[in-house]
Image 1 (tube, rainbow, N blue to C red):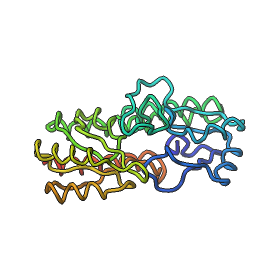
Image 2: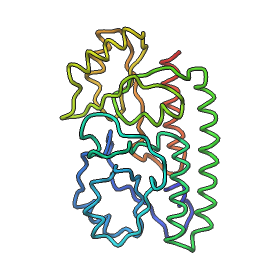
Image 3: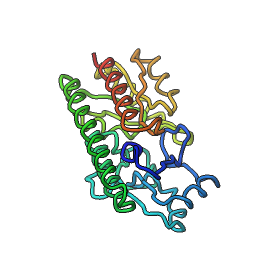
Length: 257
């Protein structure tokens, strides 16, 4: 959104959830959040059920709503029973840079409808952001091409779009947060997978728990590396997304090599 609105007079973007988080499925709006929703002219949502916590607040808001998931072919939800409020689809689709480009287009169209005076600059900014994303995606795919088909284990259930784009397989995805820790059976399964397939590393999410992953590493000798779900919106423009994905690619490549 900040990439699309850069330099547009009279437009100010504000991040509603401005604290580090591994996922939003258990987030509860604060009084400050409610006030921010009420004063907003436009609310840009990821969609696909990620912001279920906003439902009641949106019912009392006059803001235009941009749902970045509208019309996209999404993957089915994975992970623990009840995760993401039993949503049918996995909402972490921004982890595929192709979908991130689609999100930019949704934002351009939605903001242009809400603010016709800024439409030309929204379009120019959006086209530049999409070109940057498309170029980066081609580079990333080329870097990971020799490793297509390799399998990984993640301690977050939101990396399947990332893996799908780069043609990696996820043997197992464990969503581990307070109240939803990995079961003993899941831990035994991961230990067996690591040992049977000689998996060199397992991946945790930077804002999530790594306690179980560390225990598995001690038992099997595999490494524990950290990936970024890019939940925090750190910085303006498209570059923070590019930087975070570059770091993720570097982490994956180092582990596979």
